[in-house]
Length: 236
Image 1 (tube, helix red, strand yellow):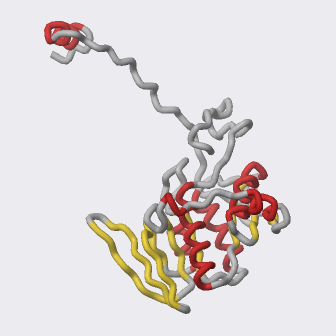
Image 2 (cartoon, one colour):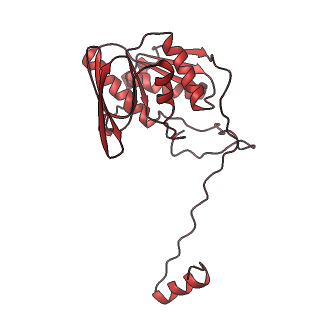
Image 3 (cartoon, rainbow, N blue to C red):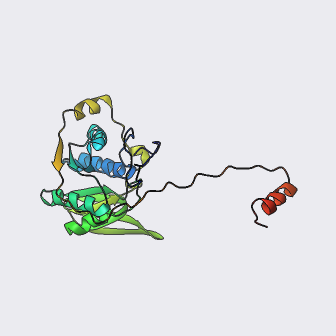
C-alpha cells in the first residue's frame, strides 16, 4: 500500500481492508526494476515483471510497463505468507528461462527480507541480498551486498537471484512514466496466471496497530518539570 494510505483491517483483524487503498510499486522493487532497465540498455534483452497478488495490484504492474518493462505477469493469489509467494514465483520461473532474477530485498509493509532468499533456495541458485552493486559481463556477474560492518562482493555465473536496495541505483535514477510510456504500456502484455500452490505454511492470527503517540507538554521552568516528573510521571 501507499505509505500515505490509511490502513484498516477487517472485523477479525486478520486481513488488510484493501477497499479504497492505493497500491504503489514497492520501493525496493523499484530500485531493482531500474537496475534491470540499465542492464537492458547496456546488454539488450527483455524485462518481465512478475507479481503474486489480486487485481488491485495490476496498476503497479502497468506502471512498471510504463517505466520500461516489456511484459507483466500476475499470479492470481493472495500473498498470505513469504513461502507461498516464493513458491508461486519459483513455479513460474523454473518453467521458463531467465538470466537474472531481480527482487527488492524486502517489502515495506512486512519488512521480512524472506522472499528473495527463499526463492534462491527453491531455485537452487546463487543469491545476494541487500545488493548495492551489480555488474554483468557476458554470462558472469559480480554482486556486492551489505553485511554487518561492511560489504561483501561475490562473483559467479548467471542465473542469479538478487535482493536489491538503495545503492543498486540511486533515487535520482528512478524513472517517472511519461505520457508515451503510459500509452505504450496499454498495448504491452499483462498475463494473469492461476495460482499453483493451495497450502499456506503460516497465517496471520491478528493485526494490532501501534499505540498512538502521546501528546507533548511544554514546561517553562525546572520547578514545574520536577513537579510533573514526581506527581504525574512518577519518575522521581
